[in-house]
Length: 95
Length: 95
Image 1 (cartoon, one colour):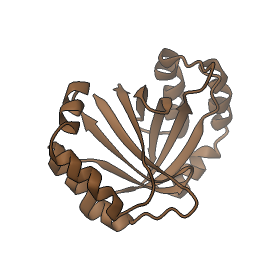
Image 2 (cartoon, helix red, strand yellow):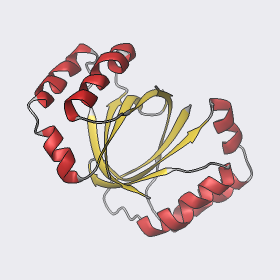
Image 3 (cartoon, chains in turn brown, red):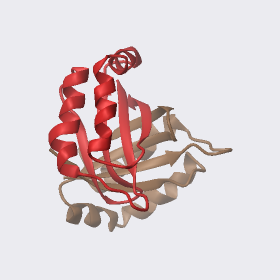
């Protein structure tokens, strides 16, 4: 299982619309990539103001999802809720 | 629900024993803090070589766990698997 985590670092002048993220952006990701769910973090303490964690069955499934035409719409939507440049991490989930 | 994530940044000269982390350190965290489970990440691509995510019922439950005497043993065990200074993030898990 592969986790794709997207982190939004707290930076000077950073804006982040948590409501839009939860109600619009992450659901768009889920529907675009055909996922069951995602986990959203609203930062309390630490370097990140927000994050999201998606799980894919394999690296190939993740790469296939990223290559879908709808991924362009997902990326274009980022400007609607934040001016932060996100940080991406992919990891193998260890049992 | 509160997520406590611990991130290990990839740095010059960094060492990290993933086996010890999975078989010894994270189980020690789980037993010390009375948790059901944790999710371990082995970094594939991105800024972190490894991470772990714990969930607590509330900020108060997390603070109580951190205040337990066994937390000292958890922290002292870090030197047994890595020379990386971890980054901590606490977040509210959004449904």
